[in-house]
Amino acid sequence: MLETGHRPLHLLFVDGNTREQRANYVRDYGATPAEAYAAEITAIAPGIVSDICLPADEGANLPDGDGLESYDGIFLTGSALHIYDIEPAVTRQIELMRAIYASGTPCFGSCWGIQMGCVAAGGTVVANPNGREVGFARRIAPTEIGRGHPLLAGRPAAFDAPAIHLDTVALPPHGTTILASNSISQVQAAEIKHDGGTFWGVQYHPEFSLGLIASILGRMVPSLIAEGFRKDEAAARDWLEDLRALDAEPGRQDLAWAHGLDREVLDAARRVTELRNFLDHRVRPCASERGRA
Image 1 (tube, helix red, strand yellow):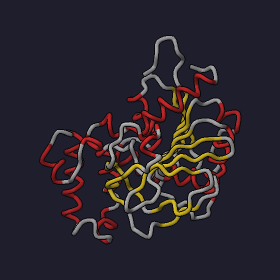
Image 2 (tube, helix red, strand yellow):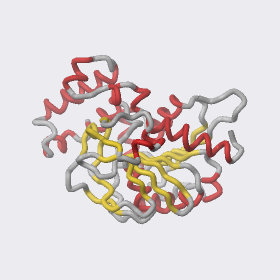
Image 3 (cartoon, rainbow, N blue to C red):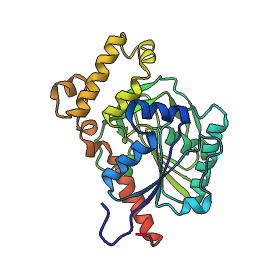
Image 4 (cartoon, rainbow, N blue to C red):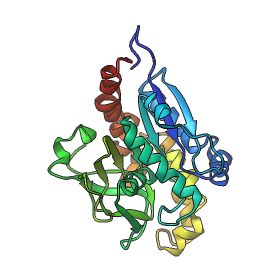
């Protein structure tokens, strides 16, 4: 919460998507990924001042080292790009992440964000040989270190979380502490220390509402069928309608039971546990240390 007499937190949201990808979000959901992310953080910490940068765009105005240091915290969104595809939309983001590490500004990344944090520090990301996680990452289990780490404070011994990804961290960089894993991805949550900076990230999407998940999966129906997640288009559409219904009425026990979802996903406050922990344990303390709070 924003305390009376304290200046608002100044946060940067780095949108990893191309212009076309952002337009798809706006068409289907009414907001870009960074705008939706900022709205989730605003719900946790009312009164924040947020900026958005678009490093996938050629000619984008990106903050330099001094600019990055001026922020209290930085959030990296997901992306439909693949970090192993060497193209300017990707390499610009890797260079920006390296600058974020060097700035020392607290940084958190979801999905593409943790992949960016990994590669910028010297790690490797590949298309997951275990396949895609669609809709939800199941049975995420904190490691022994993760059980005592503030990023996962409040999470149970196993939990599900919103997730949509094909790629995964294959070789974590030096300085990585793996905090959670599941049967699909070895690195579901991690802390990475590199070049004077500390990054916290997750392979899943605590910032995704069920409505946003449904809007993204609506563009993936052919893939859902081809990869065996749903039998046919009717089954896929029924699933998405159930997700939208749960988004509107999280108390629908019939739908929650049918899809194996519990309060870790359905309770809006519990879903964003990692985001709240990042604000409480990294952003606010660092802002105080820098004399900004």
